[in-house]
Amino acid sequence: MSDNTDNLTDRLRRSAGTDAGAPDLSPDLVASAAGRRAPRLVNHGRTTRLASASLAAVAAVAVGSLVIVNPFAPRAPLFTAAAGAQSVAAPGGAQSALAAEDAKMAIWINYEYVAGADLGTDGGSGGVYELRRIGSPEQVLADLAEQFGVDGDVAESSYFDPAYPTYVVGPEDGTAPAITVTWTGTGNWWFNDPSAYPPAVCELVSYETETGTEEYEECVTPEIPASESLAPSEAEAKALAAELFSELGLDVDADDVRVSADLWQTMATVNLVVDGFATAIDYSVAWSPLGEIAWAYGHSIEVIDRGDFDTVSPTAAIDRLNDWRWFGAGGPDYQGGMAYLAADAARSSVAGDESESSPTEGEVVEPVDPTDTVEPVEPTEPAEPGEEPVVEPTEPGEEPIIDHTVEPMPLPEPETVTVTVESSEPTLLLMWDADGNAWLVPGYAMQHPDGFWNTIVSLIEGIIELPAPFEGEIVPLLED
Image 1 (cartoon, rainbow, N blue to C red):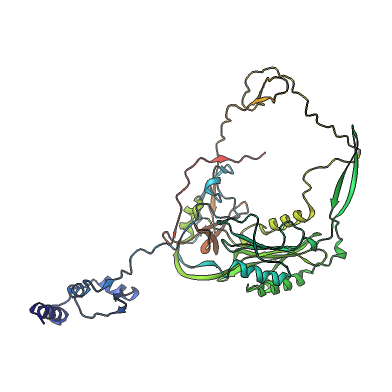
Image 2 (cartoon, rainbow, N blue to C red; image 1 turned 90 degrees about the vertical axis):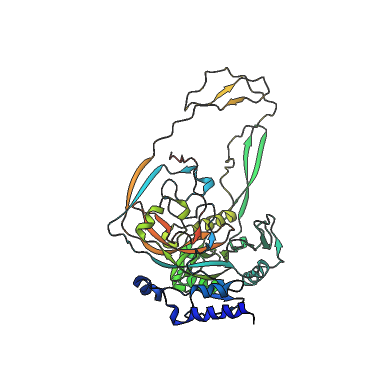
C-alpha cells in the first residue's frame, strides 16, 4: 500500500483508540438517549455499525461511500388536503364547512370559540388510514352484477369522463335493474331496480280549453298499507344487510346496522368501523313494500394503516374551529341523516317528479298566441333600493328591456356569539386529498350548544399539507 494509505490507517486506529479521549456529554443528552432512534449509516445497500469512532473517522470513511440518514429531519406530509372544505354535518361558524369556491355564502353568525375550564390540555397520538380502491371497476361490477342478479356487459356510462370514470351494467334509462361504479375516490357503486316497486297506475285526465277538450296522462305509484307490506322487519333487515355487505367484503355485525322504515321502503345502513370508530363511510340497502331490494350503495376500498402520529390537545384544537381547512367529516354520531338524501333521490326517481303541476279537471288553460305583441310601457323613475327594476319602453313586438341596475343593499353586521367548548370526543374523520382520494385521520368532535357538532382534525401541523387559506369576501346567507 502507499504511504498515504498507511497514514490513513494509522489515523483511523488512533482515533478509535482510548487515548484519543471522548468529549464530555451533557447529562440531559445522556438521559434522553434511550428514547431516541440511532441514525443509520447506509453503505450502498448494507448497514454498517461503527463503534468507538470519532466524527473525523466517520467522515473519512463516508466520503463517496456512506449516506448518513438524519432521524430528526422533517417528515414529508402524508398527503395534500383538497382545496375544498370537507363535508361535515356542523353548520359551524361563518367559514366552517365551506368549500373555497363556495365560501362567499355563509350563515351570518360569527362564532367565537373559547376553551372551557375542563377541556383537555394534553395531546396524544392517533392512527391515520388510507382508503385505497381495491380491484378494478370491471371486476367490481362483475361481482355486484352476480350479487344482485343484473344481466349485461360492463360499459362506459353516458356521462363517463377521464376525471370521473363511471361504468355501468344494465340500462341507464331506469327501465330495468342497473349498477354503476365511479372509479375515483372510494370507488362508490350504486344499484337501482325500479321494478322492485309496484307499477305506476296511469289514467287519462281531461280538461277544457277555449279550443276544446285536451287530455294528459297522470301516473301515480300506489301506496301499499303497512299491514300488507312484504318488506323485512327491523330484525330481518339488520340480518339481511349484514349478510349482504359481508359477502361484499365489509366486516359487519347485525347489531351495528341501523334501520328506518316508512310506507315506501325499509332502509338498513351501516358505517365502516375502523379502530373502534364508526366513520363517515356508509353502506345502505333498501327494500320496497314488495319485499324486493330497490336500491343499494357502497364502496370498493381497503383500509391501509399508515401509522400513528402525534395530535394536539382539545384546547389547542379550539383555534382551528374557524378554519375550514381543519374540518373533516364525522361518523353517524356526529352528523344528520345524510344517507336519507340518497333514499329520497331513489324514491323520487321511481315515483316521478311531481313538482310541476298539471291542469286540474275543469281548469281552463289560456293558450299563448305567439303573434301577441307587448304594449309599450311608460318610462318610470330609477328604482330605489329594494324596488322592482325599471322596465324600458320598446316597440310593439319586441321583448321589454329590463334594467337590473339597482343600488346594492348594505350588508348587515354579523352577529358575534361566544361559544364555550366544555368537552370533546376523540374520533376518526374523513378527509379528501388533492387527488380525490379518501383518508381517515384522528380528530375531535365538539358539540355546539345549538345541537350540531364541530369535527376538527387533531393531527399536529406538518402531517398533512393544507391548502392556502381562503381570503375572499364572505356574503351572508340571509333567512327569509
